[in-house]
Length: 137
Figure (tube, rainbow, N blue to C red):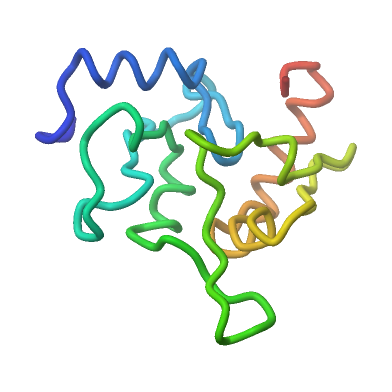
């Protein structure tokens, strides 16, 4: 457990996220790996360890995101921020296809899919299986 996040705060984050990664929607209890309490805005960028700045993330999403805040898509002069689970609605930025592939609805969705590598082949397979079992939503 992180030395920055109390047990009480950790429990709040897990329950608020319904034990799912707030980026890719993977279930914590279906994972071989421990999910992370992730700083949406990292400490090094001035983020705080408060409920408003914490998200539950699977290890893949958290490690791909790192301390990044956004990326460039088409215009190298325009930084596009990532999806923020505290202020954004997932369905407004992402569309899930029957194949398990995630497509973006917005530039924010596009930036998040790109850097968090949300369409890794293993992630697509996992989402497809979740859809078959009717447990994605």
